[in-house]
Amino acid sequence: MVEKEMRLRFAPSPTGPFHIGGARSALFNWLLARKHGGKLVLRIEDTDLERSSKESEENIKAALRWLGMDWDEGPEVGGPYGPYYQTQRLDIYRQYTEQLLASGQAYHCYCTEEELETERQALLAKGETPRYGGRCRNLSEEEKAALEAAGRKPVVRFRVPEGQDIVFQDMVRETVRFESAGVGDFVIVKSDGIPVYNYAVVIDDMLMKITHVIRAEEHLSNTPRQWLLYKALGFEAPQFGHISLILGKDRSKMSKRHGATSVEQYRQLGYLPEAIVNFLALLGWAPPGEEELFTSQELIEKFSMDRVAKNPAVFDVDKLNYINACYLKKLTLAELTDLVLPHLVKAGYVPELLNEEQRAWVEQMVEALRDYISYGAEIVDHAGVFFQDEIDFENEDAHEILRDADVPPVMDLFKTKLLALETVDAPAIKALLKSITKELKLGGKKVFMPVRVALTGCMHGPELIHIVPLIGRERTLARMERMLAKI
Ligand code: GLU
Image (cartoon, rainbow, N blue to C red; front, side):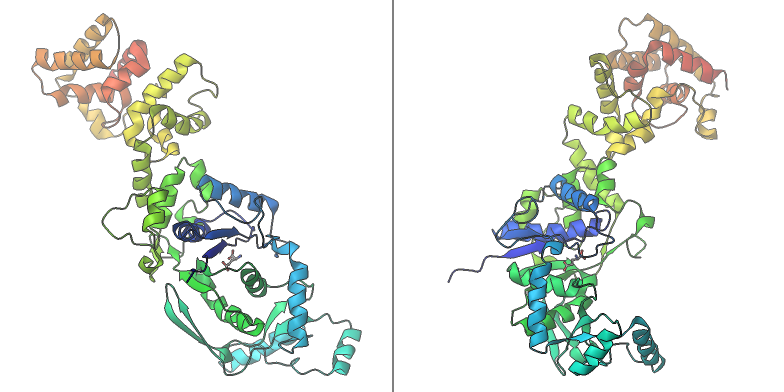
């Protein structure tokens, strides 16, 4: 038997920044499509005319590309089941609406907002779940004509069959059961002729021959309506997999409060796409072994829905930083420099255009800092020591270090030796510091620490053997003078 081709889709609404949760849904669909040699469709769900924008669509596509998730059908690439924009499919939806109206599975509803609200409040007052009571279910042609003559524009409602058990197997949630009695006839087409999400999505997934739908848990409550529509249209529903919510570390729903939430923000902060993909895969999916670092290719091989958890995924930014730092380590110095450069420019530390000498200097500085950063923008938090000559003690402990009795001879010797050096480079500074410890018979720390504090004001930071050559002899001596004067 030839196995049916697996067809998945990612169907974003282009109504704002591309959220990390959307990227995770896209990733799970993409991984499955690639793993099983299936197809991934990108469909733009742009029926919310007010909130949809071209800018958001471009942003989503750019983010997908940046993350390395390609699509087989959809905008730009075309495909046999297009168009791939819902606003270009209105005629298609209309045909199905006519079919549903003709068969009596849907009907026109003329209720006004106020009428519906009154009904809602009445049900709430009785402690019942609000749902449409069916006032327009059985209108005669005369009644309809009268309402239309009165200027009312109808919506189209789906007639929910009574007493139907809605049961489906979810790839994550296993058996999911809803009662149709709780659903109530729902709107499928608004009075302006635009279909609602629950309706358009069914027709599209059906016509695009989608076999599996992996999406966020928040859509689980939409699924009964979609399931009923599949039945009414005589189609088998795809297999659903509702992946859990993404929570912040404090276990509340991930929001702006938790820091960056869009893919674009992470790109701008200097995270690497491979690291983001790796991290997103772990938001809900548990890899089979201890290992957590995977290339996209490895994820394609290892990923499976049976290891996707029901319980919420926690967005742990420390973990993301750890993963990103692992990927940063693999970059060449030139690549890492390219990544951090925009941040140094933005901070006003380096000019946008660097000559060869400046570039070499920046590379050396990046080398000195590479172990301290886990994403590009973080370089700015550590680079100050190379640019700011007006320094101060970071705290009283640092200040105290320069008051030690051993400090004056250390400083004197350091100055004399530095002035005598032919070349100020890392090996020379290393040898210089060592010779001071020997001559003064002091432990390493007794030498390094005061020199470090005198040069940076801080007790921790990049190695002295890198700092001194990078800031050069004159600035080193000037900084020392200034700091020693503050004791
Ligand atoms: N356009 C919907 C959204 O962005 C798609 C939901 C679905 O995958 O069915 O939430």
